[in-house]
Image (cartoon, rainbow, N blue to C red):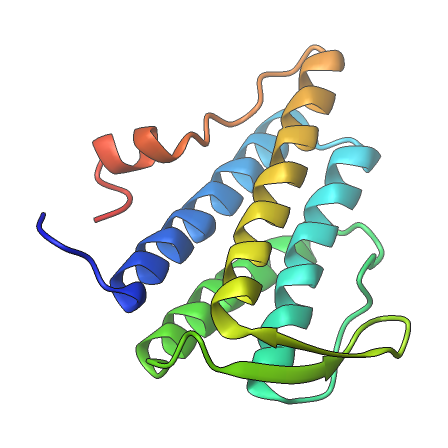
Length: 156
């Protein structure tokens, strides 16, 4: 594949992110997502929305821990996939910093690439919790390994 620049790297990572979130939602839809799994998934998506709004320097539109709702998650997951794709197509300066207020109202400054890595790691952490919780309930969680997504052609 040759050398990869930051834009290509993050584009692929957020392509994976969108795919993994949709896989989790499909597993929950098929097996009946319980309240805790739905709460964690709603949080993953809301946090992603909060971060992209910080990057775009627009007001926060969602609570970090919204009311668990599968229909909202499905709509938001699709909207976020488009939003991240568009953001990454229009961003080149990943080591530039942005300032924002966190959910406690504290002012912080972070590099764009650090924010992007945080969003990806935060989502993966909570998807792991969803998988563990589904297993505890006797369900089969989505198979969301990155290498699987690449091997199957979901991430180019």
